[in-house]
Length: 440
Image (cartoon, rainbow, N blue to C red; front, side, top):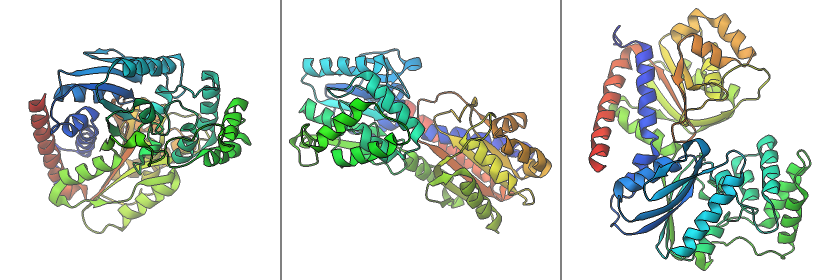
């Protein structure tokens, strides 16, 4: 039974801390390198998780690493022998171009094998254009992609063909052993869709990229130079990106070391015999996702825990505060005002939910029952963040150094399961912290 010392809020906060500890890129990289013999590596790459990934590599190899990583501008700072270089996101900027130039100089100066650390956001942060395109062409394309509503695979099919290193062109340029460790922000973990796949084979071609560009151009006009470049590629005037048979990949390997799926599976292990139900990722319109979660909670006639990754979409029609996670939590609550004894959490692993200062939010039976009218008003104004903040249903926000999409947790039977979940979560975190501290 959940006691007064362990109210629903304590359970929600404990699960939030547990999820963030499992979404730690530093620990994931250190664990991935645990069995590697120590040797010199040239460390290159970048993305939102660059700083944490670089620290994880240094935890295992405090000596012998050198290089530079592209990192968000606010995070860039010295990191021993691995420099962090500020680069733009979500639009590439002059820093992005400077990072790629700097990394190419390092590549020319060193013969060491490459440890390529890649995470979401690298398409912009390593956003140097191919020959014939300018940085402004790339920024114009990026604006159109952000406004166009394309899925991540279509976006990267196009970006791989206009980025200097996209679609395996870094591997083609390096011509040496490359080990790529990836923190995936893509729910299906397709390596070609993460950071535009600089070290993996190109799975498509100029024709597919041009088809995406032509469709997007009809809605959001693209820089003419981008379309000319793609058409020249279709005509065979520009070499294609290297495919799997290219010798560039003879000495390359890649691994997903952290992703939405790894967090979901580790969370399941942490809760152990409580037997959580693992569900496929929840994507698509947030109201459809909310209806599915609400029905699952309503239909559970025994204490149950359900876990899923997710990245639903919200079509904004108001000027409120919030993001997809808080909107989802509130929308689930709106459908369960008459249902007792449940808790629902939606957590943004990057620490930023929309335009709010929260990392997501949570709702429960008590809040849904007490303020059904207020929930409805805030949902109509797309102001979920305000409601969650006023009712103490937010998670503390701010950049986490990670980005593996969202984690959803639904519990039916909080009174029966709450204390057991708290104990399992505390034990798992204590064990993990002890193991990881000893490795540093």
